[in-house]
Image 1 (cartoon, rainbow, N blue to C red):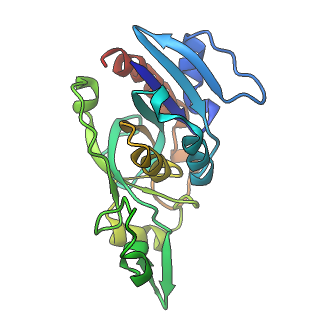
Image 2 (cartoon, rainbow, N blue to C red):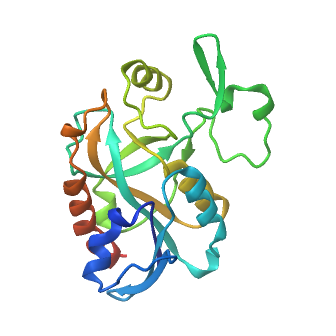
Image 3 (spheres, one colour):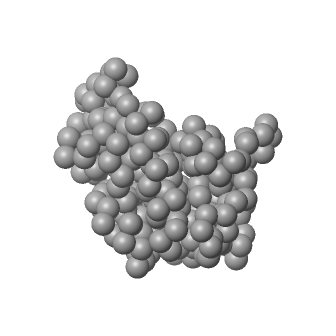
Length: 227
């Protein structure tokens, strides 16, 4: 199987690259390798949904059988443990819409967006991943709802607003763009993220990015080998 592994930052995938003997190079963001019987390509896109969308748009879907978005995320609830790996099965662009007085209107509720014949969004404004797999390392993971943002939520009123609107479990800065690009290309995909922090008024002392990255990269070879 040919598998594309997509990460926003080098840091999120560095331990896997180290284990494969891959040395990062300036001006290079794609690295071929092998894990078990699989050909893999590690693609580092840069942070944010624009960078993710651009690089997913550049790939040839015929070069890959599967795409995995591997990264970290913040959790809205304490039911997910720091370092826990989750499978994000729905995602949305939480800031895509319009403000009206003190309210926010998501894109799917705006009249001009309702009749888009190429829309990949459901009636809730989410993109849902319907990819099926026999990979038990993925199937045992908690399935969670994500939102994708340009600005990480770290202010109480903002947190309350997005929670009320979308009831999300996790938050990232690239997930929905990855969903959108893969779905448009009809490329099977999964978004796998470890929890690095809780979504609360910003306090970096409560974050554990090193643990989240370490546990993500520990699990990735097991997941890839099981395909």
